[in-house]
Amino acid sequence: MQIDYLIIGQGISGTWLSYFLQKEKKSFLVIDNHYSLAPSRIAAGIINPVTGRRHVEVWMAKEILPFAMGAYLQMGNELAITVLSQKNIIDFFPSPQMRQSFMQRVDEKADYVSSYPEQNHFLNQFNYDFGCGEIKPVYTVHLDSLLPAWRKQLIVNDQLLEEKFDITQLKVADKIQYKNITADKIIFCDGKSSATNSYFSLLPFAPNKGEMLLIDAPDLSPTHIYKKGMMLVPLSTPGQWWVGSNYAWEFDNENPTEEFYTKTEQLLKHWLKVPFKITHHLCGIRPATLERRPFVGFHPLHPAVGILNGMGTKGCSLAPFFAKQLANHLVHNEPINSEADVNRFSKILSRNIS
Image (cartoon, rainbow, N blue to C red; front, top):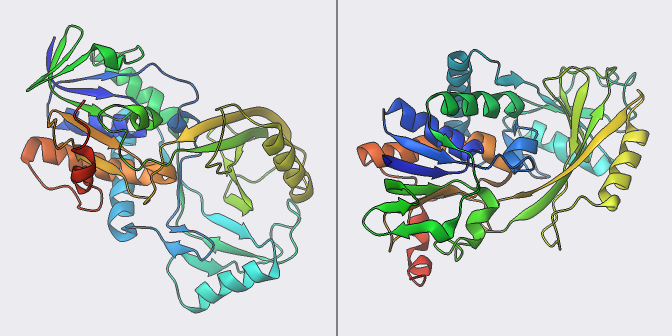
């Protein structure tokens, strides 16, 4: 088989890269083993314009967020599914200090944050003592609909090979050879696996472990995302909610922990006034980076080997934007944003000659 591009992984990055290459009428094959606990498959899909305790605007928000909105709406229309919903965050303040910090941002007229006008509006469903604020606009991407729908398209077009990628079968020269497949280039969109990939293992990945619960809470109003220490996110199936998540930078394994389950269950019991039932406890490893910027582009010593990775917790907003940049770079030789271009690590990667 002769193709233009071999894409490893069909998480959110691989999905968007294959989508944009399809638009460019390029030939490609996606290799993905449909791992059920891949971060893209268990994430809440939140696109949040602010981050951190100070609710500062996320990196490149004015450019990245509008692009992501348009891309998701376009893909949803083409697939005839709903892939995006606006679900603003109601932020319940856990302490007077957190309320003061939030309201200071409001007084500074910071974008995206405001005081919620009816402070008692949610008292019939939640316990909270220090009021609440609102973050808007916030969106949820229905990854449970989007990823399977695009996968179906790939299968119909004979563009998906469902197996675990075996890097020992990869031969890199001017072109790529993988088993019986010859490609001009290979692009790794395979999350944490790239951190141990011999071509990109020297990059400053900082994988972190995140756990979450899925609960049934049919009496909760699904109009918003709710936050009090953790996020409570309505899923596309009515009555189902995602609760999480934590960040563990040091971990011995990928298994869910009893500590997280117990802590989160207790939080829900104190926070919610409506009944709930825990149905699943899941865990995944996010492909985060030390500097919180993605890795996009091609290896300095092996120009046929590329990467689109390191999106961390912002994958749903960053992936479409940088997948489009990478597709434009491949097809039209357009530049990649310098803060994301993997060439910023060319000296480090040049040490890797294996």
